[in-house]
Length: 153
Image (cartoon, rainbow, N blue to C red; front, side, top):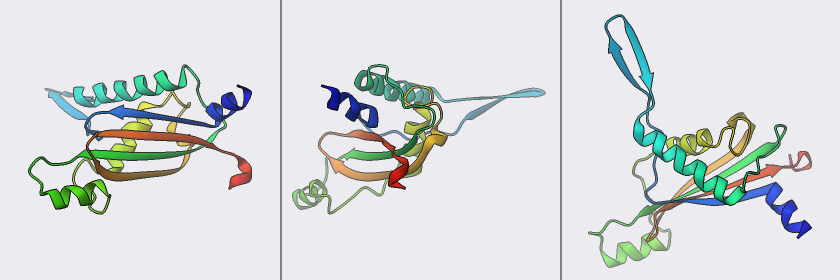
């Protein structure tokens, strides 16, 4: 049991079910002399889903403030319905990969921003990151957050 606790403290893995979503730009509303920026509702909803999925897996655990973190995000897009059997097979074998939106950087941004004060104090603790895009019959986003020990650098 003690080994398992140490493993959880070094690394957390969780999934966000459903269609991948990227961070949207803030919207601005102009009222005469003033302007107000707000985050679109869809972005807020997805950020809340990311937080919920992390919290279900981590059960309240947060990485220490001095942690150096490595974040790996694997994005699985749904396979288009009108695709040939041959292309479908190539997509499932990861020989054809998505080149569509959302962009990898917007996916990474929404995931990392969502986890501020939930998984870590601030996403500035992320010193290494990777976002990979694939097709799957089960669209989702898989996230792994791993603490890097100073000896690994």
